Length: 539
Image 1 (spheres, rainbow, N blue to C red):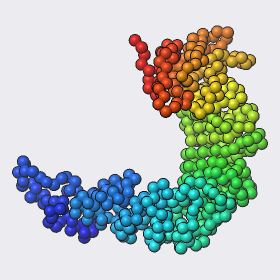
Image 2 (image 1 turned 90 degrees about the horizontal axis):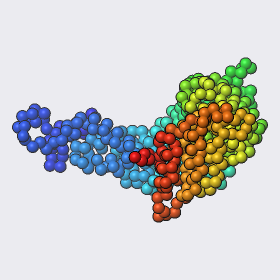
Image 3 (image 1 turned 30 degrees about the vertical axis):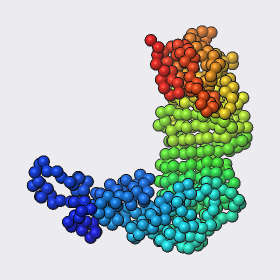
Image 4 (image 1 turned 180 degrees about the vertical axis):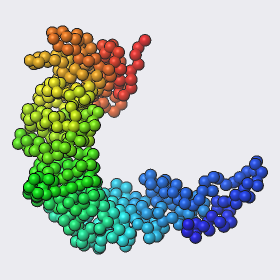
């Protein structure tokens, strides 16, 4: 405990100070005496500091901390004499509060943040305030609207912040920088203690940083970055826990595939024993294949892949990529209790099974190539998916949907179905799916589409003309099991309905009680919900 805090606890209280009485004297007071000290005033200084520290960690700025110093003289002395409370320097607090914090933080390490959305000072003024303290920077977080990095790079060029643990630089979007890349830290390597780096829309020279020993790496839409630069960072960070590479479609300098293996037998050359989270979004298929071939991560818990697959050859290349991680795919999915499939706009298809998230952008891909890719994934999961409850989300219509629904009917057990359209588009876009669900198929293997669905969720409800929805529910609930050799579908257990048309300002509530009561009637006891609220059954 510092001398200032000790004096605050022991000296006589003035008229504007919190009184901390002697415990024996307090005990001798009559029981009915009116005590003017509160229990919080009896807290040891260290406990009060921890309470305040927790309070300011809940996105509370320095200005609120200054207010706490005005509660009383004791609080003022304790709070101002606790450097740990003043280490978060946020441009949102403005220059006066920042100068106060820099003084009160003394020699403690600093966590710096400049967000253009909330900053109360210009970025040059902010970095002028904190620039002389670069040896005390622990984290630096910068979010800009556009890539105006000159003043920030200028500060970072002055030297290497020796205590920096985390560097997060991002702009909302990238404009007009081409493949030019800036060096930071005067072209010197990054601080040896740097553990986390996050770069988004930042034209930075990654190679010059000579990064190693990272715990977390995120590179998003960073122009001019080379594949070899990224691979070298990963190789030099064997204890890394999280890797996220996103929107690097133009990446070049990909190492030759044979360098992904430590010797001719094909063992991956990059052993990442601590990696638990790997995200690969919109990178080139050759780079994806290299990474999945090179990396061995036996503790991986989450693998997210988001990739463009425009044609048959790319679909085959994707399967080659996934074959490099067969044991990982099996391990990530072996404990799955259910899974989700999404068919949404612009040919986007997504599979979530356990710790695996695979999203394909395949607008031009023929249905046979799509189902072949899905089928391969289903067959190489860690458990049989045939009887695992599945959730299907259909958010757009294209001519391949009927064939896809029929294939899924024979392949999986879809128990929850969501049919949802953007109200900016016509409801007619998804209307055909309602008629498909209303009667058995006309194919050779006659069956009801998705006969295991028990939960239906849709926003295909309009002000008038919902007869097709009523007919579909009626037909599925009244189907006779075994009629014409066709098994009846399961009746719906829950039906969630929402309005799908665009409403103008001041439009009346679109609820159509006659329609809702009709759905409730033909649904034979299913729970019916309107806009998230359960519809009570009429007496």
